[in-house]
Length: 80
Image 1: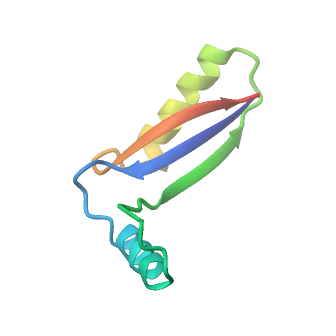
Image 2: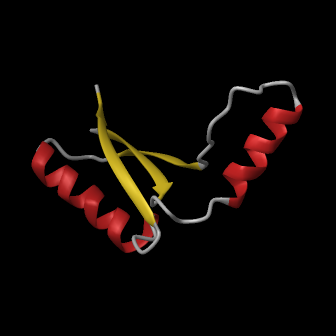
Image 3: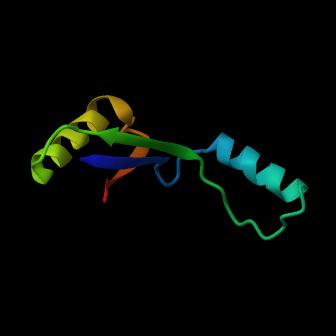
């Protein structure tokens, strides 16, 4: 079973990398950029057939290691 985890900074947390990307895009001629958020994308393939159990395991992974839940949010998606 394959999951994709998208990790982004929580709203209100300063994102210096996102700001640097936005500035680079603006100086490259893309003037219509309102905001840029930079994050992480992680794909995990779990040897498990039970969806509920697998999702709970991925949540544990995110809370324990993959995401800094003080400043980051994450979204888990099942890949078909």
